[in-house]
Length: 481
Image (cartoon, rainbow, N blue to C red; front, side):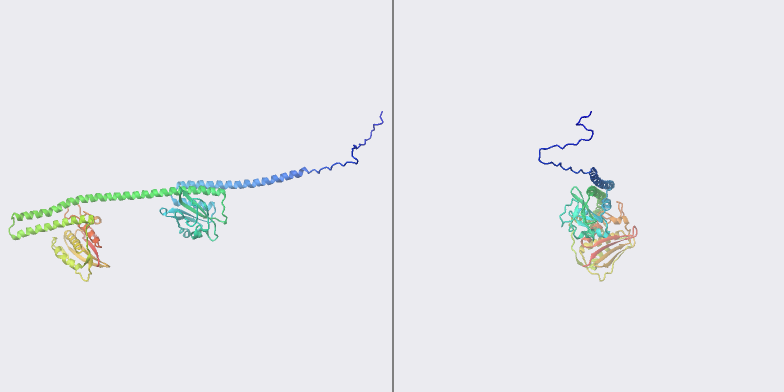
């Protein structure tokens, strides 16, 4: 049974009473942000970050690819540079890498040359050879008018190269970049690049590659320089060795000739001396039939004495020449007078039967500047030799006039001189024929003394012969007074 306070229908809710006088309002509810908007903002932020990361990744891959490519190029270059010892090949390889990898418009590479006196352009690109080959720069500082750290890569100021680098800078006034090749505080060379775009900026990986390249180039240039220096020293040593061998051969030959000379001279001196003593003893012992025979013996003794005196004079003249004490006193003198003085002496020289002496007819020949006594000694020596070596035919004296000079020739139809002997005929102790069993006497000093005398008087002496058995011609020249 239901009670009076229970009902099956809804009950009304009673509002709570307060102690206030009037009714109290409830606070307004805050509007809630939809969760989808927050998610969208986060997605957009994440997308921007991913896009940025993708760009950075792409840039890093590009840089990594370029760095990898440059490392491969530098490795290949290092292999090439390590295999060459020639500075020209080093410069060519370096210039190719600079032009291709760094896209410079124009470039020139200089190296230290001329014993360190200056920098010479060795290779260029983007310019005609005539334009860059003349761009020589001084050493040790190629740009003395501009403050420049020579061992540091840097941009060149417009005034850095002054007018000499205008052709490299070009009409577009491209900025110039200086790359030194330094090793052990020595600037062995450098490259100057004309870069495109006008912007003075390098990527970090490019600067790293350039640093590696310039170190490799500097070491290779240094090695090439050392190799060239060693090659030059080797060539110098080879030349010196050959020269020493030649000098040793000449000394051995001179020693042999000197030995022959001493043996020959002792014989040559003994022969006239023996004649003098023999004829004198015959006269002293009265071993003659009459006065004419005695006079003939004395004449032979006198002739032997004259010959002995001539030999001794040759030896003394050679000693004066070697000590520098031989003197000449040139003065204007007439050749016709000289020949007149020489003629009777030569006519008295011994000769083979039928050998004729032909004298020139001198007319309108100017005076010559000579020492008359020394020229007379030379001419008598030449004529004596010609008569001694001529068995048949003639000995002729000829006179020729040349601009500023007079030539006197002694031409004979004698035994002649071989081509090998002509080269050494004016050396000390040398003669046309060697050996002790020679048919003709003499010390071999006459032509040597004559050569020195003619040179001291401002003249010359020379010999020409077609060979053995074809005669010879000795020519002396003298300046006109």
